[in-house]
Image (cartoon, rainbow, N blue to C red):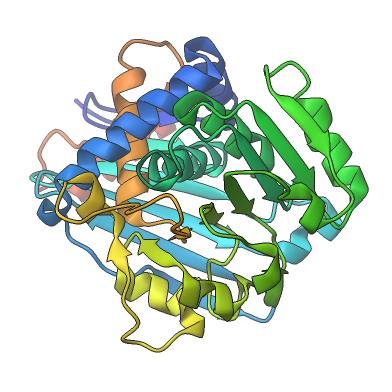
Length: 355
């Protein structure tokens, strides 16, 4: 007689602490490399996925978003917020959790924290895109905005692209010092800079990852010469941009999912018919990436649900090998699936008997 958790009620759950242990057990750079591989696999089968711009609820200080997708067999979604002012009260500006489910039964197979996992997948996505778009032999990256994303980006570009030098700038020098401390033992040459212009001197890759929700100009047209790759990841919601429109007009622009990026990305500053290339086409060999050494390539990344699906799929595979998950009693599992109320009655009788 079933009155407590049944065998089908438990769902694997990965907590924040367990996610950190999983990443450290695998190794940060190995995790980033493997995760990029999962994203690359899913981008190669892009057309199998359901795709929709994320569902957003905006307020003056931020946004809450749901990011769903399915490949026809599994379903995944992420809940994520973006509230830049949270930092003033000691809170994260971005928090997230996600679910992976079996589409045929509707039963979830994984519930996971995704605050740390999103940082890892964003970095893996950036470096994967750069592997297709950045100049050959890129070794130096300038990063403007040294907050929560900074170190993940630096390590991903080291692991996936071979970057060995990172030049850092933030309007708050203490944030740059924080990033430099965290990267002390990363095997990178880290240069702390006093301006955005200094940060992008003699680099092949420029990453912008600032947090303020506003139309900002982190990169002006005169800062950017020919032959660089721009990894623009900070502009990720309506009204939030980092790159001057003149740079966009000079660049070959690559995006994840154009209908979403036109709402949220740097290209919200351009006409709706401005030509862009979806990155999956480059990865699948259906469109060219960088055409020549003088091109400015720009990855206008806002994050897309398929990347989160890939990340959840990767974690679900890894917890079969690494012991960093717990069983969460999440689903009702009555003896008779048509008698849910009877399960409640039996529980009531058990509780009365044990009182």
